[in-house]
View 1: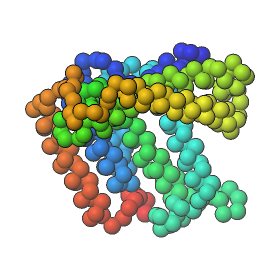
View 2: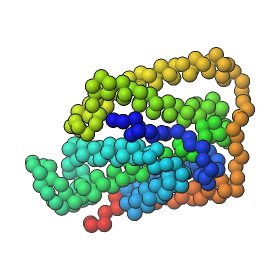
View 3: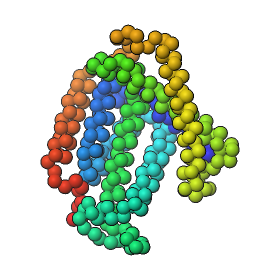
View 4: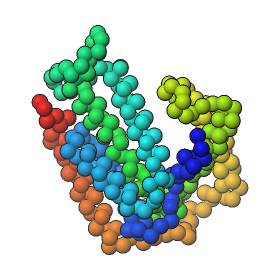
Length: 280
């Protein structure tokens, strides 16, 4: 696998777009509202538009597509494999939830691809995928320090706000460690290309994740020691270099998000059917 194929990132990208100009808290509330809407519905009439809007917002960040293309492909692949395992573990779950059985293709024993199970698996896969674009939008457009300052300004203790800032700053380091470990494993003969079977590739990826976890723990220990040596947490408050005030646009967006969140929760409480199924 070439280095070019790994030229992706999951970190703040300094560009001038309307999304970048929004306050960090506004974008965080957008993310929370989005997750709330997704988690309270299994309605494709809502999920599909959310995916389209999420991809539009992702494009509106002006971050090059090649920067997140591997992430989108990887997420879609993992979710597709998750759907396969869900079918293997519970082949009749869609039939039970939707209350009918329409066999499309028998396989063997109790395993058969039914219209209900297929619709259920597609709905769940798209439901999980719909949260990914907005997560990238949040990371790409939110400066970690500015976001931490905004959280502190609305009342969150600065220690927690700073921890959030460190988490966002750490994402590019995780990506860098992943690429370095991957190259080291490839030099030892670990093949992650399409030349090996899928399950072998998954096993080989596990050989990367182990060292990645240990390197992350070591780095977290180093950061903790550095913060202690600098006296972090001794004062009751702190000043922020990158603090952004709320604008009229932020207030309008937040008002709209609160209305959407209330409507989503109300819909979930009022509706009787968990799934929207047009063929029933």
